[in-house]
Amino acid sequence: MKYRCLICGHIYDEEKEGVKFADLPADWKCPT
Image (cartoon, rainbow, N blue to C red):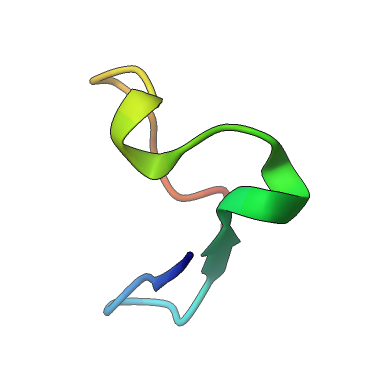
């Protein structure tokens, strides 16, 4: 599944990153 940041448009792709979005740490921030 892919998620898009509503502020900057960054796409988080779970398959590419190898980590489910729900499993990211609470302090994770968009890299852009």
